[in-house]
Length: 422
Ligand code: ADP
Ligand code: MG
View: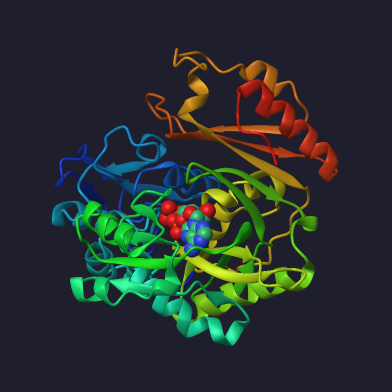
């Protein structure tokens, strides 16, 4: 792709009128003076952090999201308020943007395809479609896994009563996961026997599912890479993730997390998974480290996110280039340089629960006490209304050494009533 340089007038330079989709009518610039505009499908917090990164580099931004108060829409130059499949909204988006990315995997693949008819879109509809469907995702991983020294948890596709009857009892105990629309542990049921399995499938409304063997997890990691239009891949080191009630709570990002050989293997596997589908953009792969009798444990590839990831938020303060910077650079066709982590870091997710005390009474978190700690970086997403489980923001804690970062993170978690660190 021809690079889209920031801070310069866009090559097409035509005035653009938006408003067909019910967004506020606006005319962008004069002929020849319109800045290059980068677009993002989805207005959540990931879109907001993409918008901020793009704007820092001198791009204009355009967000498509049906919510007029979406976190990204609120801070973007342009916000097309429309459903993701609305042809008028997509036409506005294509007119406004020089290139378009996505901040969530459930954007309709057809919407990305239609945008791609006239604009560079990264990642492609085909790549996003793989991440939207666990059946496709597992097949993709299986095709890559043998080559890269990582495995895929044994699984079976359950799409019919015949599949249910044929289910292999070696997959039990297991987890039944809906093929589509699962996130943060939603759309998953643990099953111990075949009777449980039948009941769980009925509970999930008999939609297409995968039954996955329950793995003996030692820990969970993720690897974030960015791949350019030219096929160059750069990578952050694996970060260790702790989930509470299916939602990411803590990310530990420092060297001693994982043996070096395993870290190299996880990054190589992620690169392979990206290369295999000519991926362009930021990609996150989640891994399990499982007990397999070896000293370090085996690597199992779990799932992919075709975008920046909650577990990569530490890169905003601990690395010279963040995952959102890489999303901008990759989309714009600019060079990707290997990011360097300059500080050990811990990321603490701030869910809406922090705005309530132990008896459910609303409260204001004691930000002053948290911000008085050294190396604390507060990120809030501008969401209206805290609710338990809702992602409201995160805290990045950086410092000169791991012990110092852990100690500050413990104190911050204590002040806010967050889960313990270990
Ligand atoms: P989600 O899309 O909700 O993140 P995941 O497949 O990542 O779905 O599952 C959520 C969590 O459930 C994982 O982070 C892990 O803790 C646990 N889990 C998922 N699959 C397995 C498995 N096969 N064995 C053990 N634990 C699992
Ligand atoms: Mg997951």
